[in-house]
Image (cartoon, rainbow, N blue to C red; front, side, top):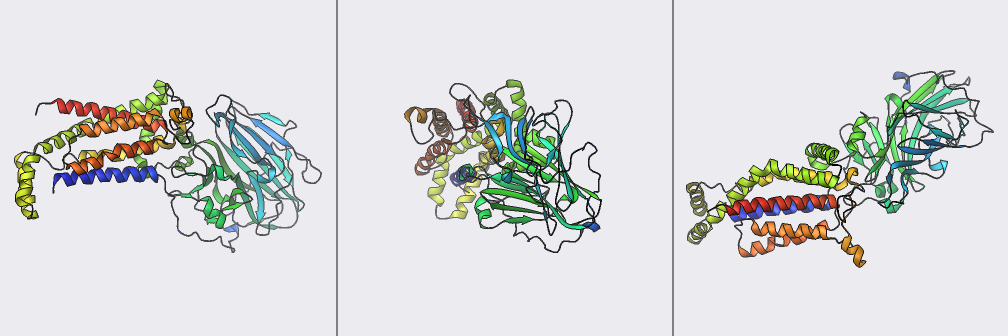
Length: 544
């Protein structure tokens, strides 16, 4: 095989891989058409829910008629929560360690902003003939409307109501010190003489505005995990029809680029999951099996919630597979160790920009011998070009003879025609894995580097801000493109002049693409280019 064709093929592979991953880094995973929820669910006596007494801490008055709605403010070191006793629902969740923008006076991130109880999360209703009104007003376990969670031990919030059909509902929220995850227990007690039969429906609600819609790089919307596969449901599809899943779902969520609202049901708390778009909101409803609520029996439904950043360490800390919400693409098995290494370096350096630089240097050091072999092989191939041209002129019409003579030439000069290609191909998975790590990591959000780079998660806009341009333009991607051009000029090539000119378009293409990319990703590519230039310079200094 002719060497120039090999090099051209590898260049095209790199071009296609780069373009595909940059333009379409996270395609939605399409599941098979889900089966609709059965209308003939077996009564749960075959696998009964845990029957537990209501918490002994409860000493609440009977709720229901005549109870006025209250708003309960809950404060911790991580978030401020606002509950309404109308439905005992969460109507606002504000993260104290994250701001909306990089501005000093920016408001804090609100991961939930329902504004009214109607759109609140963690509401319960009944189904299949079991009547539980969503807007029942609950009593609250404390007379105070402002609650500060303990820094040293878990804290409980208890809400309770009794319906007109004499069904007592108790919700217990259990918070843990300095944790983004918490437990939710719903207790159902039939105080009447009539057996009630039906399902308990538990929901999270997230208001939708088209301004928060995801882009080609980041998904925004409901995501659910079944232990093997992550399902992303596009909002445009949900506006057409709802999606249903079975009891194999381990958790369901609403995610943005950096934050997530996740709920995991336990045991028989789930028979099916329904996700729908209604009233400008995305509603994830977890439905239990049909239960026979007998007289004077108490039933427990357990869930765990998470309201916080899409941080790998914090999500793994829950031990509930919440970390699977971070989809690092095809090279996930490589990307996660790289993400861990990046945070490790940050722990020493205190600056994610320098952590990216150090991580890039380490990766380059690991692959230095392979890259050395690759460029040396390409240089040796370049020396054989005059002899290869003679063979093409002599045997150009006989491809079989030409290939035989060229292989003989390679063997005689101890040159491997694939030596310049294979080492570079081995590095591709690592490069794209790191690309996924840097593209949407919450760690880089609002993280400063140096000079004018004050947010590693945002594009460099120094020039466009100064000139009032309507698109991102900064010196960092321009410098990166220039180093890529130098690198390409220094690299040995066996292409003909026409092919070489075409390949010179690559730096222009990458510069254009990187204009809108996060600065952290551009820094990685820039440092890698500089190290490659230095390595190529050392190779070129060696005597022929």
